[in-house]
Length: 267
Length: 197
Image 1 (tube, rainbow over the protein chains, first blue to last red):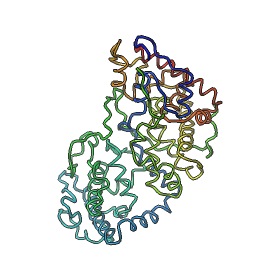
Image 2 (cartoon, chains in turn yellow, orange; image 1 turned 120 degrees about the horizontal axis):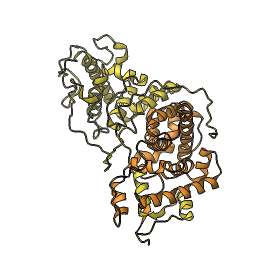
Image 3 (spheres, rainbow over the protein chains, first blue to last red; image 1 turned 90 degrees about the horizontal axis):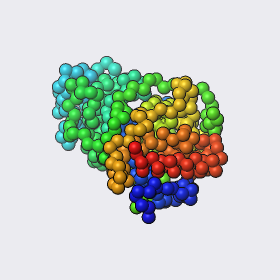
Image 4 (cartoon, rainbow over the protein chains, first blue to last red; image 1 turned 90 degrees about the vertical axis):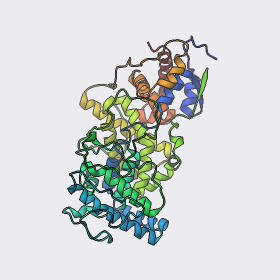
């Protein structure tokens, strides 16, 4: 046992054990440092998930994804439920389209209540019951519900505590278009996922579905359906004096001409 | 007083059930499963981000984005398990970081002054206070204050969770050199944490 007034030592053996992955015993001070260094993810650390997912899809994985996913979804939910989900999703997408127009602020709470599907909202749409019909607004092409968008929303809502959409991120374009605008993504995703989980009854993504604070409060129309104050599930007890890890507008990704296999980085 | 430390790099990972499936997720993602890719991202990204924070400071997010573009693009070519994936991803991240540094013509910067180790009470309770007080940023800043080769070796072993052999591959060194760098780095860190002033 080390005296506390003595500078803690770490032995070569301890370092070697650690490098083998064996549990090690280190002085308190280093234990604290290690614990802090591997603490749960901080704000912003997962902010690039959507961009990464888009890159994943863009890398040629897209062709296999929808079929595989829809098949497995059918297996899980069964056809009737899947159909209901599709209806609900179509309804919510309609609302999403309207949200763009409803920039004045009073976005009707979409999908409030248990039956997420039809008619409770003042959307100027008569077609909330057919998944195939397109919303009445212009950019309808992107409004076709897809598992990919649901997945994006799920990741967006559940995994990021900061819901700012990178303004110039091309990867987010589809989601932004579907939501009817950058500032609507949080609301849109919350509504979409709510409908999704309400219809499916799985409640898989319930806990984290609260839309977080979104971009700097300029989001007048963001009446979040759930609206509780944001709590960070990570619960990291630390403050981040370095601050501002988020709101970091990443420019268009650079491309790197060098080859595929990551050879050892010589430098 | 001594404290046992969980297996390197596994602290938060152990808490997420999804992480158990990382190896499976690699295969599924290679077949095009977007959700599996998401599992990979959430498992690996915090580690990569922190590694990059030690290397490039506040540009870690940008460099991580670059790295993920390549990871996504080249995923199909990867062969191996979870540990191998971490090493592979770290290698890509490192190359992006070195590119970045070459462009920026500067060596690692930290997001705050290296002597930022605030309000740690000096004396008897310093160690306990360090455990409670130290933030991830502070820990990474301390690591980044080491000589670059030691800093990289330490963060790869402690945060990314690589063993000496894997870290050696990432760094392009011999495992023995990595062990020595980690040892020296940890020794210095222990002294600095103990005497934060």
